[in-house]
Amino acid sequence: MEFTTPLIPARLIRRYKRFLADATLEDGQEVTAHCANPGSMMGLAEPGSKIWLEPNDDPKKKLKYGWRLVDHENGHFTGVDTSVPNRALKAALIEHSVPGLPAYDTVRAEVKYGENSRIDFLLSGNGPDTYVEVKSVTLSRKNGLAEFPDSVTARGTKHLKELSQMVAEGHRAVMFYLVQRTDCTQMTLADDIDPAYAAAFAQAAAAGVTCAAQSCDISPQAITLGAPIPVLV
Image (cartoon, rainbow, N blue to C red):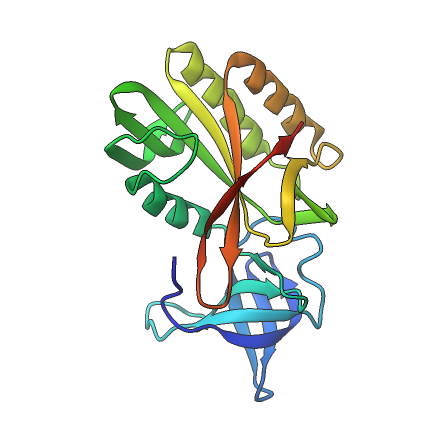
């Protein structure tokens, strides 16, 4: 997935109200950017961090910049936009290029299911329907190890229970984690941050929900799917 507009570098001043971030451009101008990430962004919102913004000239948008990347200035990047995984995965699903997921011709997004929920992707074809829930992973507190979640997620726990119900009804269900960090080769659950989510994950796995994690290749030009990585649980 290539960025629509070339990204520009900046230095983070602060992130606040979850969806707003002030930053300083290279020319010294201070701007406010939209932060498309409802999580805690633990370890990613330190003042002075190098970040990359995507400018826009859309008259419908109040903010003319969107925060897309954290540049760790060691050759590695983290993608902070939680809408990216769904966009990147959809293209790969249509191309039948996601390891472990069926190469079905019908890929539908945001299909209603469960209790007032929408599944990220419903795959249909020659076999059981496959329900795919996607999560963006950006937390890393140990070198090489990504963790999810970075804050308590009652919504994520609810999704795991609904995936279990889909399996009980004879469908296939997959919990798919897209690790938006180039410095991680493994993933695990942050059970100290959200024990309820970890417990729901264990129950879902016992019920037949499968899980998968995949890395990303990230640069200021594009974010694309990388290789599968192991989930340590």
